Amino acid sequence: QVQLVQSGAEVKKPGASVKVSCKASGYSFTNYGISWVRQAPGQGLEWMGWISAYNGNTNYVQKFQGRVTMTTDTSTSTAYLELRSLRSDDTAVYYCGRDRVTSWYYFDFWGQGTLVTVSS
Amino acid sequence: EIVLTQSPGTLSLSPGERATLSCRASQSVSNNYLAWYQQKPGQAPRLLIYGASIRATGIPDGFSGSGSGTDFTLTISRLEPEDFAVYYCQQYGSSLTFGGGTKVEIK
Image (tube, rainbow over all chains, first blue to last red; front, side, top):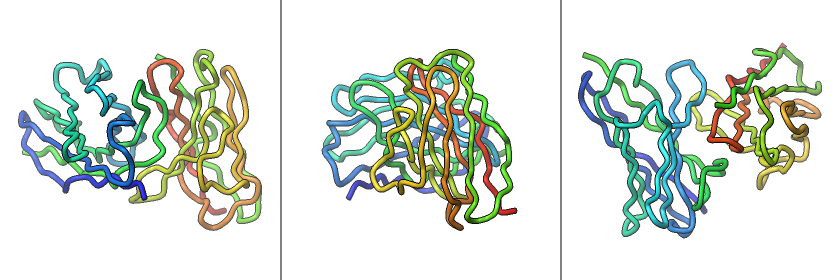
């Protein structure tokens, strides 16, 4: 069965970086892409960007350009989200979602979420 | 950027009633690339509908999506206890954006 399992909760100080992982199983990793979505406490969903697990092509939402890097490790079927220069308003649950390999569409499977708390 | 406006913000209904949720786009969504998700507290969202009207795998036929252009609707024919949740629409026709959500609560 398809599963996306994310890394555990993180607490970071303002200005620090965080790297969240998303390990895929139950499907051919390189036949799909991964999108990252975040949700601030009590708020809605916000798309951050997409990466193709086939060739590493990425598309980042302009709001996060320069602060975000999405990568994949095909040897371990794992996707990563790195967010730098953290601010308090980056406090959110970060989700990975299985997407299409050529572009961003919709997400048929999701990880369980990783809570990132940014606090001094 | 396409802005999606969901209404109402909260829908108070009883089990067995019909729920009608609206998602309006600030401009036409190309190819009707519109999806709906259900999210329960403490859980990740679950895909219900894509392509405006195609049910995702395993989704009961009590959930249906309709609409085109700028106006889309999610209908839950008869609310079951497990259907009380927050519902989000998402468009993927031009970049990707989510609506603000509709909470379906027990009346």
